[in-house]
Length: 123
Image (cartoon, rainbow, N blue to C red; front, side, top):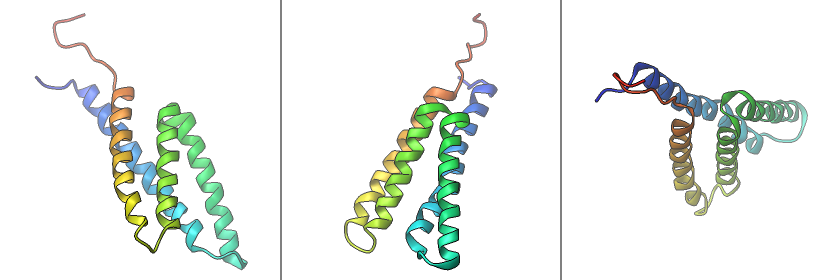
């Protein structure tokens, strides 16, 4: 049985939103750990913090509601924990957590954001 085109398009968009937000958020999280606290690096660090705050607000408000916002916040926290424990053996603990979190976010967004389209012949 084939999926309805609207359902498939919504699913692709929902998964794309997760990876787009990860692509926009995670380098900023890493930048907060890498940059120093003097001069232009401090200014860039402040700009990255504002960027993170605004994107997390967008994740909560526009992109998909509380589930999507919580997923992105949790995953950003896992990336922060990864870089906080870097270098060291504890950083490897966060890699499976990030992948499991991405999988859970994808499954949750797919279940939440893809509209139920009745099969052909019904309703």
